[in-house]
Image (cartoon, rainbow, N blue to C red; front, side, top):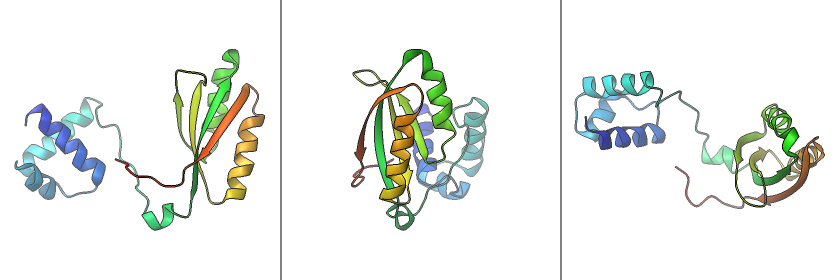
Length: 142
């Protein structure tokens, strides 16, 4: 299976990591054995490190999500990361270039819960400044 087929396989697994091997093979135009061995090799090489859960649009539309930009005291950066990692509402944390140091992606069941979470993040030791943007809709997500 050529390398570009690996990328096609990864794209199909991103759509549905529980798709049957036979379906993946049919969509890729290769045998089930080829797909299974390729998945095993991708896992062994550390390209695929795990599988996750995709939530239904009905469930997700009940969540309030936001991007929170942080300016962090450099010496306390590791502490901020540890404190954010401990919060289940934090879905992703990115180090970035520019006038902010990090972008935190958060989700909460309500605006009120989001407000509380944003206050908690802003009050963390090492967080100097925040700027939050509530996500109104997602146009593309892969």
